[in-house]
Image 1: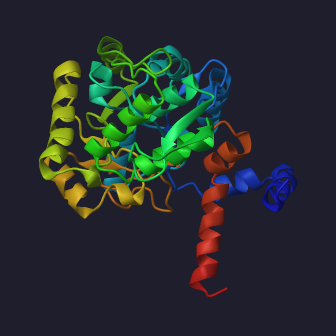
Image 2: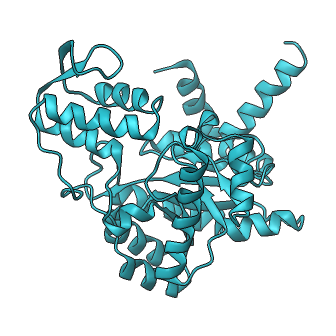
Length: 335
């Protein structure tokens, strides 16, 4: 047990959650989810865990669509204890498990969809790496920057998936796709054209029904989920505009928000923000938390959510926020 965890366990019965909730009442919590599963498989949150999280939000906070939250904030009337639930990518488990719980609890949400994925034109490149690792207990990987010559064999693991994914994030899109194809080739594994079981997308008809109910907002997550800063101007324009037009065509929704793929500070810059503005987007969404999540309309920040109960409580009640504010104050005062 870490010192921070020990302190939290001691302070929790003394009312630290309610104190933090009050202090963080004007700090919106924008939550980022990806996948829900029946049993909480690696990389997912279980149905029961997700339901408990939504119950907590409904009981103690003010759930609101992200777009509505931003609009109110721009008018200077941000709701206290506001929570916006968002999902990325558009996996089928959103329809199978997440949305029924959102309906049950009456929680509005925003789903950022990768339109090429939902169309069935592509499946997501990080999933291709997971799929490859699932087929082999040991795989061969290039030793030198993607060159097929000079291979080493290493055991499959989550850390290996993370290492390969992080390397792919440094590559231009076409180079990345070739590198992943080479990995399948040198390991004698067939790369399926369509997303296999476990990696399939939600369908347009399902999304249309969900949007009609009023609980679901839709945003863009591009067409093919590339790192935007590694695209040519023409490819960037395609990813922004065609995803927007595809959503409009299939759902009749005028999309105003784009979620940056990967969403770290190096994955978007002022040029990308300006491209969003020119493409008709009002807002851009990242994948990391800040003390002022709505301070920049083209860099709206979010908390990543996992299955750890303590971390979720700290995020929701504002313990993480209050702690970060306190640490910033110490730094500014030179302590």
